[in-house]
Length: 345
Image (cartoon, rainbow, N blue to C red; front, side):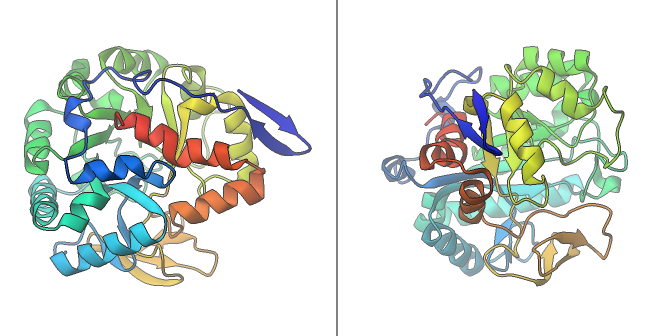
């Protein structure tokens, strides 16, 4: 629960059993023997959505072993114990190739194995409508279907830990059920399901919502909108936030944390290759992302929506302390405890 005090959010963060969210079996979510040492680094952060870091774009078709190693070394040096490397929407053959490449690099490098605890597949089964699609290429978006879902999971070679999709595009929730039964966490995001569709997805195994407050139009119906629907079901979902103060203003994040129990909230960076660097021009897949002096991002000069974050998870943790007055225990729960429970650790 959360309590507002003197304009700041003070949150009581009880300890919950690590299986309290689980429908999928956690067996396939456990780290490898090499990764197991990370379980001892329980006070370090865990980031479930990282597209790149320190100039390295995980969605690049030219991703090299050296670049991935460098990014992972910098991520660990920053205080992050483990991440889910995130592959975003593109045409199926492109996504399959990128997932396969990431898997191969993961197998070949002990440091990468220690840092990359799995893969977050964000798309292509999202909502293509303007606003909901965000920075994802609309022409590559497709309805959820079992054939493509199986191809993506197979390409990841057992590293698929989380898939973000739009429930309204999942006929009969077949893909949600398939993924959940396979031990892959399913998150709604970049979507606009009805309340009934959201409930059906939860019944089929949906357990999270990806970066609430983003991946939706700037202007929505004042009452019946995706944010209100998710908040109405917040006791059944784990809600992810991007806490850079840009994606969600801290005033709004404080309000959200009063509505969503603390044990069901977590923070992701949604970091792109600019994270760890600063203003400049960077890549996200085949697109150019411009980062301004405030670390706000836009793609190809289009300022109508953000294109990931240039802020790292440790930087967000500092902002949570400074802007919201959260305690160290509260920050640890958002940036470490809940993400670890999502992964079954």
